[in-house]
Image (cartoon, rainbow, N blue to C red):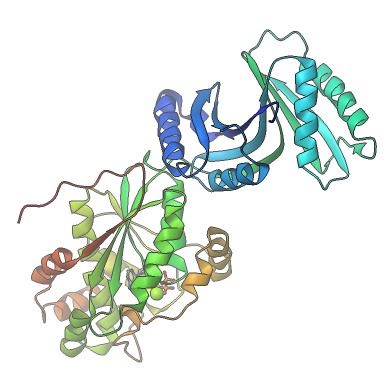
Length: 405
Ligand code: ATP
Ligand code: MG
């Protein structure tokens, strides 16, 4: 049996700045963690002086503690995660806990101790703690050297009221705000590289994300829908996505491609997609739409075309990637874990009925005239009604009440 209880300390910076809202944010983060960590051997999750403290069950192995730490690192609102032990406020106990923590950090060559006291009456100050615990570690690890600047391992010692937390593993989290602290957004989610990153960025700022995917079905297979489901499962790991609506769009695209000038097709598809997304957003009581567009990346992402699509909806449209280069977005997708999925080929609605020369500078008047060739108002309702909802685990999400038709 291990002498000390394994704990994980979750630090959050930004929440600390939020003045009166602070406790709301802290509670939100705590609830999100409670739910996301339900598969781990967690005893309780407490809030203590500016930290969230995860107590792991007795007998939890280092491997499982590390997995749990990895799971927390990607959760929005988490600035830093430290994995170690709780011990008594006694020098001997702290030294022994520090030895175990440091031994678990192998392989390493150099280390230092970094102690802090959090409003406590503990008589030894942090400089002295650094020296005393450092001396105990030097004795236990004679082959290792102490190094103040950029050591391989920093042993953290946090003395708070009543107890002490000691750890050697400490890593930066994704930061941001806890999901559920910034309302709900509806994101247009293709199976491509960009839109999952865009949605994740909004989740990191605390928004509950609901996706809408336009499938080419029945004109194409449902392959893109499976990829979108895989993407949603990645976002689900950190509680970032609540639901994905899948809209069978193929027949409508076909109608538009028959009725309208080829150069304007893409914009007309997109205006219809935006309107359907907006209708679903209203039903979800969401406040904004999100896309993965980046300025100039493809024909539909010129300034003129962005204006022409935005004009179709009233809600604000957020484009978190508007100023990002493709390589940056790819890097973000790799970190997020969606890149491999998004790199697989699947015909979605956008590859269907693509014109050879899409208009890059659409004029709104021309677009609106072309649009009168089909009954788009009825289509928006029909498509929103036909949308199939797939639910994912998002602790902060409350689904809208079922609609009576
Ligand atoms: P992505 O990598 O996200 O697919 P993209 O580079 O392929 O983006 P476009 O196809 O022009 O760019 O799409 C721009 C944005 O429009 C996407 O980021 C996404 O938000 C939305 N979008 C495109 N296709 C679909 C779709 N089939 N379903 C839902 N949203 C879509
Ligand atoms: Mg795409």
